Length: 168
Image 1: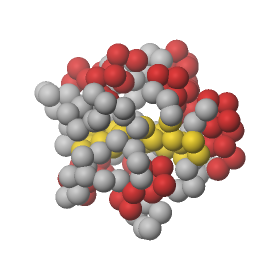
Image 2: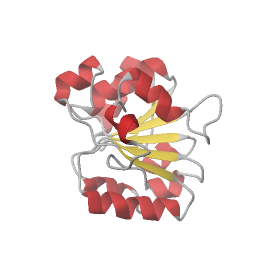
Image 3: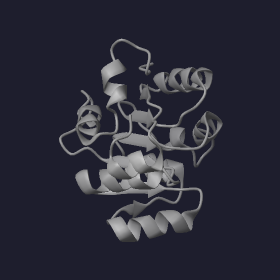
Image 4: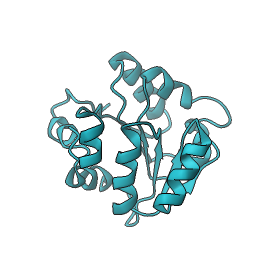
């Protein structure tokens, strides 16, 4: 697992959501020339993050527990709305989650509609949830069994940082 305390990723995580940091993350060795991105979690911080990504890396696929929020975002930003987490991940090279807790990220993995049903080997799950390191480690281990990479990249900077694109 690459995490905020690993030597290999410390600088990357600190700049993970500046535009330059986003580019560094998405240009990982498994990414094809055209990186397909899915963003799950369009809350107060996730919405502006996804908006920055939608402008830089179209077309973006989005999913949110409240489907009306995802539909509104998609209409405003030219994104595709996914019906389920699995649908969002199906063609994605990179899946970004920004949810309230690690428990919710872990729950998104499960079932026929979960991320594990849609993600393929070589993909990357970038979790921006400020969550529980033990759950992140458990999530990383489950994903590794399927050859899916995981970056635990909790963000700080609040809504204003997300809007300005300066989260750290």
